[in-house]
Image (tube, rainbow over all chains, first blue to last red; front, side):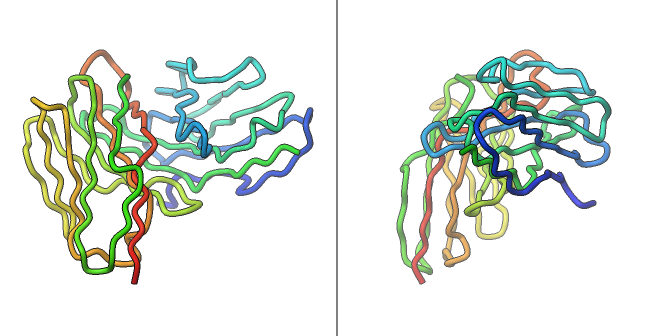
Length: 115
Length: 114
C-alpha cells in the first residue's frame, strides 16, 4: 500500500486565492482526519470524517475553511479566500476506527504558503 | 482536554545515551500512543500501550503507563543520530465514540549529537 497520499506537496498562492488540498486515505480505512501544524499552535485537529460523513468540524478555524469527502478514497480541504495566516503544513491522516487500538497513518503533508 | 502534554519541550543528548520523554494527560483512556515526526514529514506511529498494560517494549523503545497518575514515559535506549525528531504522545479517550480521533500536544524535540 502506498500509504496516505496528499497533494500538492507544496503550494504557494497569493492572498485571496482559493486553495484546494487533496488526500487519498489508505484503502480500507474508514476514518479520515485533517490537521494543521504551525510553530505557534502546534498540531491542530481541524475536522474528521467517519464512513465519509463529517463527525466533528469544531476545529475548523473559520467559514473560509471547508472539507468534503465524496467517497471513501478521496477528501479535499478548501480555503476560500486564503489569507497569510493560513500558511502552515496541512496533514491528512487515516485509520481503521472499528478497532479499539487503531493507529493513525499520516500523509507527508502539504506545505502551504499564502503571500 | 483530551490531548497529552509532553515534557521536556526539548532534549539534547549524545549518541549512545538514553533519552526519556514524559507525557501527562487528563482523561480516562483506552490506550496511549507515541508518534515520531522527522523534520518536514508526517507523524509516524511508534508504539501503543493499552490502559491495562504497565510496560511495553519494541526494539530500543520502552513505554510505561501509570493510569493512576495519568502519565506515560517513552525511553529510547542507545540513541542514534537518526533518532533526532519530535516525539508526541496521544491518549486515546475512553469516553463516547471518537472514531479514532487523536489530539496532540507540542511534543518533545529530541536532538541526538553524533
